[in-house]
Image (cartoon, rainbow, N blue to C red; front, top):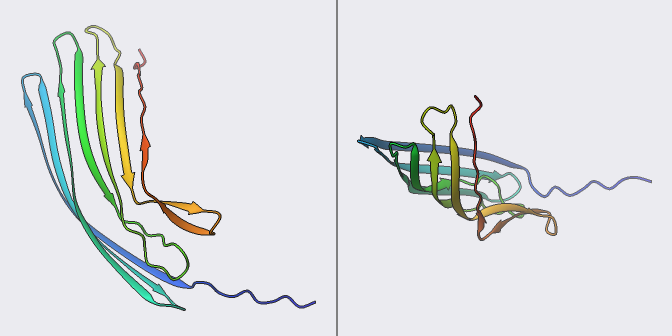
Length: 163
């Protein structure tokens, strides 16, 4: 019994380029340390489905981060930070479709560090919140990638350095 030749759904070539420019400033005043940074990214994705249409996607984003930590004389140091992110997405959905929109995110974090004087130890506790949009996930019902609207994570941790 001869086997049937499967139909070709896609035969594609993909080229991606990305250029980023980053600026950062870190300053210290007495026991306060502050960091500010910004990055501009430009990306281009060319997708040539050799049995269908070609697609070009051009995206750009300005992202940033800011953080501060204040160290008291007793070794306790509260801190806070905020950052945004941008990541071009190379995958596509159904065969022949264009690339997805870039994944973008925001992260906020607050916490406290403690390095007791005379100890070779550092204790840290932090809470953070991460939100991402346009996250690509594989959809087994469809057999190709899809997009989720939002994801989030939160956690806390502590660590003691070995003596």
